[in-house]
Image 1: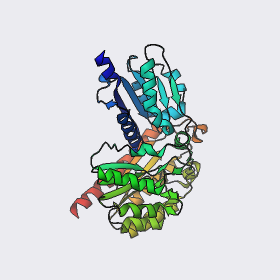
Image 2: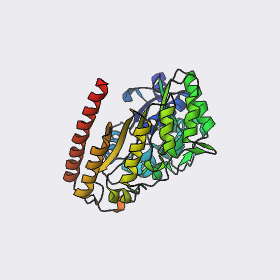
Image 3: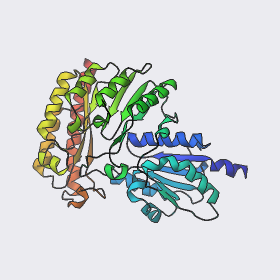
Length: 381
């Protein structure tokens, strides 16, 4: 009986997806610890299993469906995060062994849900889903838990209002909204008190941040002045909100790392318009030119999608040409996969799988060649 009670208080947590999901999992761990739960690395030893999910790529979803169905029904099984918000109670229909579904805005409710299910489990198979939340309570960011002893992710904004046609984020994380700048500063100070010396500011579109008169560059100036902080950086920027002021901040703030992740997605103006990216190839190239003039020796990374609906050979060639011209330090290259709810989901997926794989391989090999040259150059300087 004692062992069963102890097992009820042990939770196994698996995380899929981006840095925002990693931070969400840290928040969940902090909340659970405050409620007396222990996090364990062995799913078999846990009384509850939580899967924090990603809906950005189909492959990530397929892995979650497989994992969720692999656990025995003697455990409490929960699916949280973007898939939870995207499929809601549909998850309980497709994966009947799942006991609860919680969207990103409702993660503060997880300890209470576990307590209810632990009480009911074995008496009647209760199912709970919480996906109606709009905004998270600020206090969830102040539980004090960070997985890394030296580095911490700090969320400055949540959601997105760009509605890029391929992207599910606005549908699963809601409209863009910003935390108060003083709450962000307070969280960083608390993290430093725990020994954290490096910070990454997180948002789906960080450089659109605004809290009253405090914009993103002002926020970074405030972060830069915090005693005890050694270095910081940020993810992810949208080209349409990227400015000369941002480049000057990167160049001038001594604690801010001299690197920039600036997703381009495509080098074709026609495809960029279909993606609803709100900029042109020339606009992006001008940004890169200004960035490198202002921030000497800085690194530049990007995201690229190949095989977007209607992408022709010429469109793909435009992307190859852009990669050759910019010479990114690194690039994350993805094959397009249709995402439910998005505008692109309504478009015919015209590029065959074999052609997507071919284009992916070509651009990957090109970037590997560029990255190799850049790495050699860095070592020799």
